[in-house]
Length: 418
Image 1 (cartoon, rainbow, N blue to C red):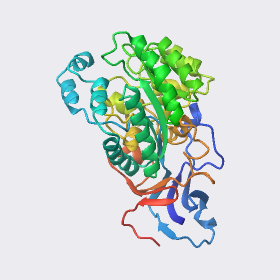
Image 2 (spheres, rainbow, N blue to C red):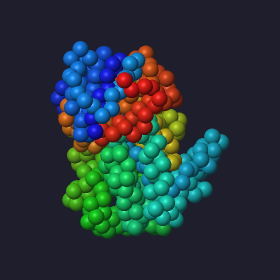
Image 3 (cartoon, rainbow, N blue to C red):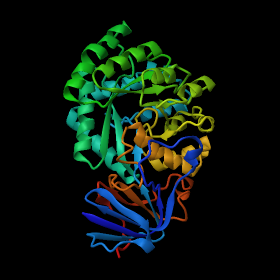
Image 4 (cartoon, rainbow, N blue to C red):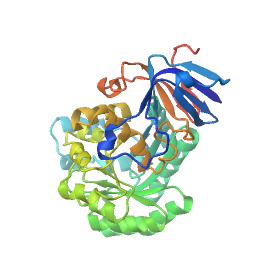
């Protein structure tokens, strides 16, 4: 299929060549072509530029985007999209002032999600996950990472990852998968080392045998997994071809950042609790710091110190953490708003963090994350808006009018084609 989008008010995130990432001061640079065209052919970005230079092409679909902006689709590099049930009862407990420990004592938390998931069939999980997949597509996401971690048994971790793979096969989303068996210690393990042994000796080999996980993750946090345990699990996963991506420093300075650097993690995610030592540890490394402001917002915790990290020259990625317990939201435009409002990132920095840098966090920077010839034709067209900064400004509004994934129109509004 050939699609020509013309009279674009602003073509956002234009890069002539593929970049590894953008970092520090460079994150404030967001290339935009005004009065532009974009030509998509055979599922790829074939050409773009100023309207004055638009070639004559006989496209199957010609769209007039006058007054509208075109963005590369968002890359959401951290989600828990596969889960069995919501946890709004815990939300109410938090409102009433209960602590996490008190909620856990009532059967809440990660173990609550695990119990429900273990009672849910693979097909039921798939049906609910596909509803969420369609939801995030409407919010402009074209690539998503999906973690396990609510199974906590070999059978159920495998079940989750099979569902995540099915989402990628049955939707237009590009899906990357992460094994997160080290999410919590199940209650029936009196010796935590027995569960860690299960992860290493049974779960990882079984998952690797089916080729179900691109990455391996652990919740490196007080009360969950220690830095030493996390490192051990990461190194074991690497032997089976799974690259580390670590939940680090969400609630405390946990040592997760340093473990991520030591084990060569692709990313360290959360980072609400950061000090100078942690920021320094990330400098001159290939580890992508990934911020999840939706979790900080929902839990009422401190936000990651984005400006300190940017001032230190680091790159930043921005993802949703979509999950039933601490971030029940897959809205990437809202993450832009939270980044700007709560972490004082500029719109340019936030957009770079949600496109190019999240693509790097999934090792897909050569295929997604920018308007670059040869990359996959994943883009969206906005409503008529005054500027690209209006995207994070109008928090909570869905400003996305038309979504194109893999060069196919997924949903289209009512404005006329030319």
